Each structure stands twice: as C-alpha cells, then as structure tokens.
Image 1 (cartoon, rainbow, N blue to C red):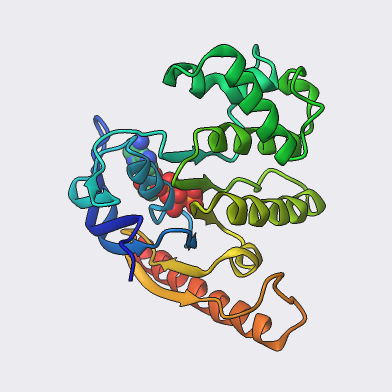
Image 2 (image 1 turned 180 degrees about the vertical axis):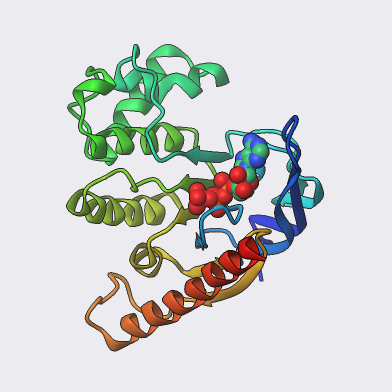
Amino acid sequence: MSRPAITLKHIGKTWTPEGRAPVEALRDFSLDVMPGEFVVFLGPSGCGKSTLLYMIAGLEEVTGGTIHQDGHEVKEPSAERGLIFQEASLFPWLTIADNVAFGLSIRGTPKLKRRDIALDILRSVGLGDMGDKKPDELSGGMRQRAACARALAMRPKVLMMDEPFAALDVQTRAKMQDFLLQIWRDSGASIILVTHSIDEAISLADRVVVFTARPGRVKTIVPIDLPRPRPSRDPRYHAYRDQFAELLADEVDRAFAEQEA
Ligand SMILES: Nc1ncnc2c1ncn2[C@@H]1O[C@H](COP(=O)(O)OP(=O)(O)OP(=O)(O)O)[C@@H](O)[C@H]1O
C-alpha cells in the first residue's frame, strides 16, 4: 500500500485567546489521507474542522501531536498544500489571469510562461474568456472557480477547501460539485473538504470523517460505497443520509447538554 499523503497523529489544539479562557478545539485526532483520496470533514459547528485545515495548511501550530505530508513534518505553509476558503479570496486589483499567476511569480516562473499556465488552467475550469476581467466582474461561482484555478496552478498534492460552496445558490453549488470532481480526477490531488451539508458529503467523498462536538475527535469514518455520479434516488444514498443525520444529531445533543451542565 502507498504512503499516506497526509498523516495526522494524536493532534491536539487549544486556543488561548488573550484575556479569555482557553478553548480546547481538538483532542487526540488521528487520520491518514491517502494520495488521490477525497476526504470530507463533517461535524457540528465549532468542533474544530477549520482549525484542523489551517494546521494541515501550516498556517496554525498544533499544541499536541504531529502532522506529516509525504513523510515530512508540516511546520509552515507550502504550495504543495493549497487552501480555498468559503469566499474566493482573490486580489480585487488584479485580473483573473494575474490572480492565477500570482503564486507562480513568487516561485520565479518567467512572466510569459506564467500567463500561458494561467490561461491554460483557466480554460480547464471553464473560464478561458475571463482572464482579463477583474474579480468583481465575475459571478460567485466563477470567482470560486478562479480561486480553484489559482490553487491548481501551483500543482498542489493536497487541496483543502473550507466550505467552498456554502455561499453559492443550490444550482451553482451542484454544478461546482461536478466541476470539483472533474478537477480532482484530472489533478490526481488529495482533497480534504469541510462542509455542513450531508448531501455534499455523500455526493463527493471517498470517506467522510465525522467529528465529535468540541473538542473535536474522530467520531467515526464512513466510506461511501456508491458509484459516481452518486444516485440520490438510490436507497443506499438515503441510508447514508439517515446515518449521518443521526451521528450529527447525537453530537449536537451532547454539545447542548454540556453547555447546560
Ligand atoms: N483564532 C482563534 N482564537 C481563539 N479561538 C478560536 C480561534 N479560531 C477558532 N477558535 C475556537 O475553536 C473552536 C473550533 O473552531 P473552528 O472554526 O475550527 O470550528 P468549525 O468546526 O470549523 O466550526 P464551524 O463549522 O462553525 O465553521 C471554536 O470554539 C472557535 O471559537
């Protein structure tokens, strides 16, 4: 069997905000993400999903345990680990092509080559004609595709997405999910996606990691054993939906009970 792309061993994270009580966000969280695997993080609000993504990205430090990518300990951000947020964080003063090429300029890729790569990737995400536009001239879905193009330009081995489609309408969201599956297949990258949507988790994931309420731990890991595109009318799809609804309800109840205690 191949080596995991990402290995999380006994991760803990306690936030210590100034002047406020410490918050234990994650406790003893262990997980392997395999090369080319699509993993979805699903869990109640505040259970540490985003915190964990930022730590895998190298933007936050762990307070316990270790994170490795391809056997190397993660200590800082790397272009090999791309991160995409809910709102496409494009530079508003740059054109879409320049946004996509931005990371390549830091890497030292020559200007003409940068533009070629940017336009190529923009074509692959269906934005071939949009290179010279500014972000505010694009729709929300297009901006999010441009953010994907910018991350993909760096050829990341792992692409992390923090509720990337939450701000989009239902139809655009469904289209973006299809698009994401396509770029996932084309790029061969591992994807770790955070969502609150049970349907999104079932539609996309190879495996769904369900978090406990805070402090977040692995409650259970559910492989989705359905062909893609996932048949939402299939009784097995409904069985997964019921299973996740029950697992989440359990955790939400537990979180409320603890708040009231
Ligand atoms: N910078 C920070 N400083 C202090 N506490 C933080 C910080 N970031 C997150 N937290 C706390 O850590 C806990 C986990 O937050 P996080 O955003 O990772 O959860 P989440 O599962 O992504 O939540 P949601 O689903 O609501 O986005 C929360 O209690 C949050 O308030």
